[in-house]
Amino acid sequence: MPDTTSPPPEFGRAVAALSSYRPRPELVVRPLEAPPRLAPFSWAYSVEADIGHRGDGLDDLDEPDTSGRLILLHDPAGQDKWEGTFRLVCFVQARLEPEQLGDEMLPVIAWSWLTEALEAGGAGHTALGGTVTQTSSVRFGDIAGPRRDDDVEIRASWTPNEGADTLSRHSEAFATLVATAAGLPPVGVPRLARRTV
Image 1 (spheres, rainbow, N blue to C red):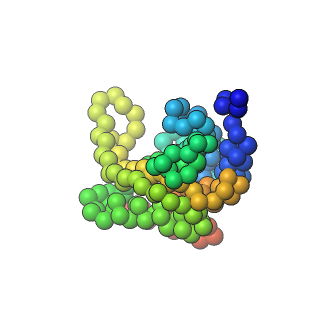
Image 2: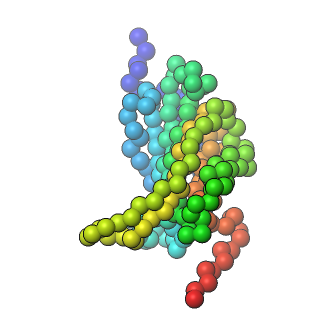
Image 3: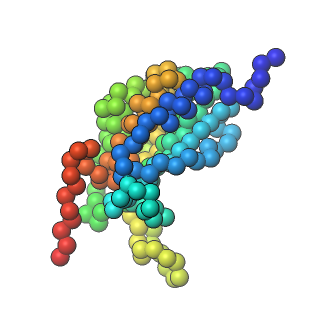
């Protein structure tokens, strides 16, 4: 009788491939506890970006400008909706600038951040779906933080076409998505300083 409690080798290879990608220094990667019961085997990590991130590990990212989670799901038996045995699930939340509020094109633009990152990274996929949501939160009383937060949230999942050993392309695409949502320039392009009045 097969051992259903030990992760299969292909799951270990997928985790190793996702872990092998080294993101740009403005992004901080941390392991996460994967949510249970979504699949027989799962693994997750977070990526946080901050406009002032120094890349030395000493930044305070309690309130990052942009954060995301990527979850790897594996069901050796496969699932019909997945069209495969692996599924990647992501969530990204980014702060909006005041001039972006109410922009009817923002959900379309935010979704393109994901699709373009997957395409540019060569991260082949099927069964891609998700949502883009604009949220506003206003703080009252004795709660620390800015009085108002306006965010865009991207939730998506897709099935990678590649084998378990080549999932680093999907890590790269996810890091690109977080960097784009944070407003970071492409690698090698200096960020323009914000003008102060």
